[in-house]
Image (cartoon, rainbow, N blue to C red; front, side, top):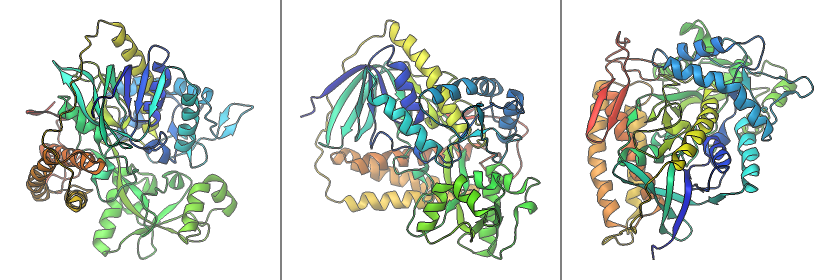
Length: 528
């Protein structure tokens, strides 16, 4: 039964911007297997509305972009990493253009229509209307469809990495079409699985964002870093039927204002930059207003701008809100904060290397020190593109060396039987996500974190019992992963005895004078 084996030089798990771009580049030096648990284009990249930040204007500078990133990162950015990624930005933009991404602007003059978002001192966000990520995914997938040396495996979910003597040799993968476990052998494994927004009840992330790469890497012995730093986007559409639809920060960049339940503007009371303050500040301000008033949502209003401008600049947001019965040219939009982006992740260097030999992480799965404690808007696609490029060079060098090949033993299901109570899985999933949003959300406390830790330890035991007793299903694999990531977020939040960036603890409201990263590996935790 479990006999299918696939071999390649590179095994790429995930298919957002970083995974696809890496694959296109690495295929010039070896064979590539791409494993993605849904369609090729189903990823967080696909949902990215605002754009990609890079210095392409004479009115801007690398120095300004670096300083904006570090300022918003609230002291936790690694300056050398920030400088390298920002410096590489313009070249990666040109590469995306060559691959078919048509950023808004004047094609004849090469001047782009640059957006402004929170935390930026200059307009530097390249975009395609309000569906930038979708256009990037489509452009890259078209290139992949005709590329040599690349095999794409949709509806395949990675379960575990196979590591021996601290070297990764591949992964066990669940074929969702046959429900069989397959073996993928590779000289280098690249995790590009995105973030873990689905660990929280309210999130802008797609359904696939269940922290799979972080969980698999941790189980394999990789170091994880700063997982307590979870960015909440301030403005998710609040609607009973339309889930996970983000209202881009670009609206606020174009003048949209936030209104409380009483219809009055409030952000000027929380920060001098008002609606264009860093995301952690805006999200906390909205959270405070909601808790004070007991309201379900606040309002985001851009209706005072010219209606034709709104429809042309934000066509996707306009159409989606119209489906919800909201004409944003005439009425404000109901919004709430939601888990959006993991600044933490698997610890990696500027080339995506981890402490496990042959294992690379790129995109949101990685923590390089670029985003610090709070990601600057539209820096995520920038990091994804730069790391994809850097890792493709490093991983290609890796496979040229004498990489020891090792056979992956067949998957052993043991005495596992077909699950007979799938309702328990859905109940545990719901409990974890609700616990995380209530106890480990925008505002935390020592007591809330202790309650969350105690509860997740109990839940973990139940999940592990399920894992060994029953044959794997997609829901069980994802449940196991979100439970582990939830545990790591809780434990690392307990380690940080201060408030900084996205991590706000009401019992430790001040920043520590000592700036540290939290790191954790199986059997080891520390601050660095």
